[in-house]
Length: 354
Ligand SMILES: NC(=O)c1ccc[n+]([C@@H]2O[C@H](COP(=O)([O-])OP(=O)(O)OC[C@H]3O[C@@H](n4cnc5c(N)ncnc54)[C@H](O)[C@@H]3O)[C@@H](O)[C@H]2O)c1
Ligand SMILES: CC(C)[C@H](C(=O)O)[C@@H](O)C(=O)O
Ligand SMILES: [Mg+2]
Image (cartoon, rainbow, N blue to C red; front, top):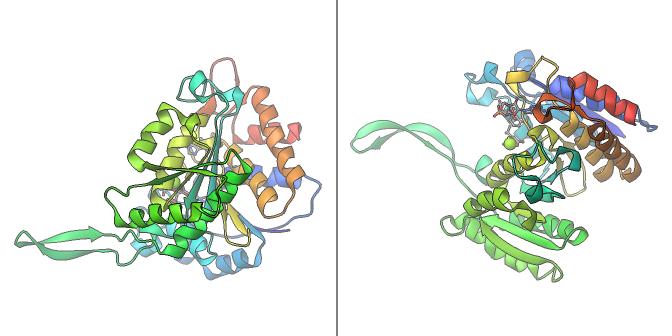
């Protein structure tokens, strides 16, 4: 089981260290190799995704990523943006299916931004398309154009989906729904955008292959509202790259914190990159404050989806549940009466629970 470990920037190395300790505590044989991606790779090589990193990622069975980016690189030219390292791996490895489970651990009911009775038992899976949409669409750019009789800078991007891209992510979502509550909500903006009119048409076509799943459609603005009004109406949600980015951050707060939301980014062969849904959290980086649980839970997803080690995945998930029951909390999920711990201590607690 070869794992390419990419700690990245900001809190990335701190949370990754805890996930690696947890993996090493299992009775499994991993070969782990670390490489640079993001801002640290820009600093070392000028390239957010050095060729050596890409090669290692290709050669590995799975990739574990911390986070990339930070203010240090905000004024770098666009081809040196740390985020390009992440987007580059997703695209190069065709990791088109991003699974983001938003699950409320009962111990965190009070950490949720919603009332306990609205979120109790929450278990939603957001299936986000990850290699298309406005993120990758061409043409794009910033240039001088004649507007209203004067020369002005204009910025533009292209929201584009080909039929095959929509079809394959819809199939992943329907298959996930088959294994869960058999309800799928497809989120689009078909009232305004042609791209998502096509999305809705194809969702309806693909639904014919899955007659047991109840397919509903929702416009993205309403979906954002419904997520905080009554999130338990959802089982599986499927949407495009950009809407999925936004809705999954929103959903994370229903579970208490973005520091709790893991993710799997899979290709057609279940090769995957596993990453927390949050970013490099520059405001708390280097202070031993970050919540490592999203990364640790991402490692559990890796064991489940790429390595078929369901028992080991559940062992990690039970350990996380246990440390929460024992009252351990990083600052993002802290409430009076619980034990506030740092990143490393949270890792210690998970190891002890294992
Ligand atoms: N997958 C990724 O690598 C990824 C994802 C999102 C953002 N980013 C990048 O991260 C940088 C910062 O972005 P941002 O501030 O918009 O989003 P962010 O997710 O990094 O942080 C948003 C807020 O959530 C908090 N937070 C995030 N993760 C946490 C954790 N594990 N524990 C406790 N608190 C946590 C942060 O402290 C911050 O207050 C940007 O450069 C952005 O592009 C990277
Ligand atoms: C860092 C950024 C490119 C990334 C995204 O938008 O996909 C992040 O926000 C995420 O959710 O993984
Ligand atoms: Mg995001």
